[in-house]
Length: 396
Image (cartoon, rainbow, N blue to C red; front, side, top):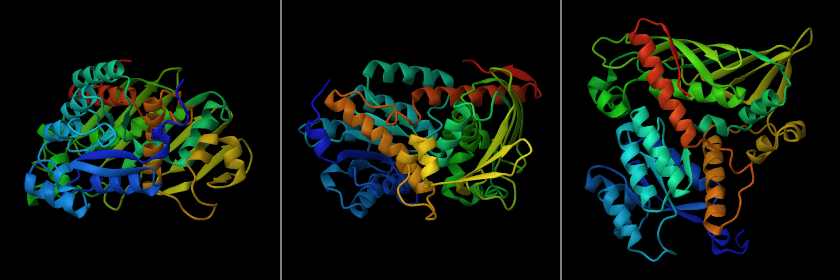
């Protein structure tokens, strides 16, 4: 065991960012999430593949120009050249998918903890190699399946795992959006351009981008692993190179059955991630666009509405209590959920640095193992659809 008076418990964690340059969406989300609790500070970055744009973002973030780098390799070398008490503790990776693996691998091999966007890699082979690197390093690797950071998702998980619903029979999870109903990638829209490019996004479009969130949410809440998938992927927008809609029948370990669909051509839908879990003795549902409520149904009984921030939630789920910042009735949402993943990962980093053992609540964040599951999900879905929507086992 380490010393609770270790210096790491007396300061903010220092982090650098790769990606998140001018015009990027998720990089700014990472920065906002990191600022929320005052536990970490951005001190370095390689924000764009264009060095001038990287410098521009570094200036906007008030960074020391010497710590705004042109490439991630320069960043690693520059940070290692600093005294240990000055260099970054971890890196936040917010690039398109094709860069996740080489960047994460390089930072881990040079002794830096990692928080990485999803999907974790471009394929299963890379995911398994990265897992070996993480396991060998003993460092923290957190993956940004941030919907697990919502307090009421943690409540739902603890209800299901605690047996409140009885044996689970059926899981329905959806993630509809409508923003890609037109080929806006052809007009240079940044977020659409890389997500619809196989060289940057990988083997799947919609199912890789948001379908993986649905898969991760279902496994997190239910505690059940996907066993087999029968998938039908479609590219509705003419000329698009990757799927923009997908529908899956799912078989889970233990006998539960499921439906999973993701879509980015569903007009009128914004960010409709939602889950329904049906058991022998009850059912629950949660909606990302109304994240402060979990609805529970019992046999021949009124609907129960569990509301974030109340004492009965904290009593049922210490994890939900830990992730709650403000009293009931004041909505918490996406940025707070993102910050919860950051806080748990960073508290675990502090313990690692100090030689302490993190408590289980700190360890409640997506890891490299979730990243491997996500890549197996993508490859299984793509293979099933390629074969004409047949059942394909999803490797463990």
